[in-house]
Length: 350
Image (cartoon, rainbow, N blue to C red):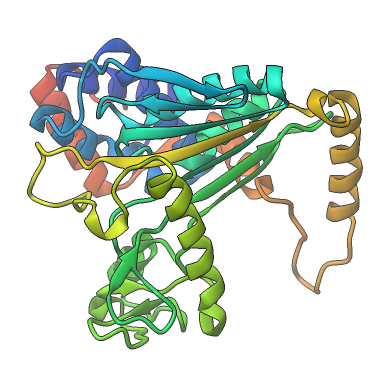
């Protein structure tokens, strides 16, 4: 099967229909779809619509609550906890971001710990939602163990993503979305399919020894190569905020995302921080300062044959292309989409 492309509007309708058929309520289906399309539009395909078959499975299996009763408790002026009722992680993150923004408008900074959540996909989607509201957004989440520690020989942290978004005056927001592992696991799968060697210091075999053979990978390495203690430390910070501060499980205790158990909730945590510029220098000065900073960054001298870019520049350019050309759907995902369409009694999105 050749690669297909699908219009964003058609994909949105398709994903929401599949999730509704799987048992998700309107809010959950819309939030999960919004997050997936954020990633697919910006070219982060590992966290885009290719997640749809997995979400179909966990909604049907009962791991993720289809109609959650999420409850927010304000603890202090700028802090609170959201009990996500084992609902979809995207819905929990968007709801937490809204509460964090409300807290920040009053206190200058708002922080919300998310309890009893699930896989939420692209962390940048929720940071961007806060930036689009005129705020600075920071989002983090832990996951099940798949990344070794520096000098470690077993899986310990998850890929533990961190995202941040800052509004600008004249362009798209500054957008950082990164894992704390050296590479995402989907990069390993890509190198397997292409039968090429991995870069050094990105993955390890079952003994924690560096391997460049994608077929021999048992765990990922932390970000930083020989200085992997930096990536492991950053992953640990995210673990503390997401799992410890929220009172949830830590990475080694979380059930694997792709395991055979699709009915037991994973009891994951996440953490959302919102900063209101008006609680500090003011929104107008922030926007002007960001424009000045980004102009200086993009005009800085680049090495021969390269281009200096700010976080998010590559993704915004890809989003512009995909809005015109559609989102590429790889052959495996296309096959899965056809199966889901048949099961839900709906047309495919192409």
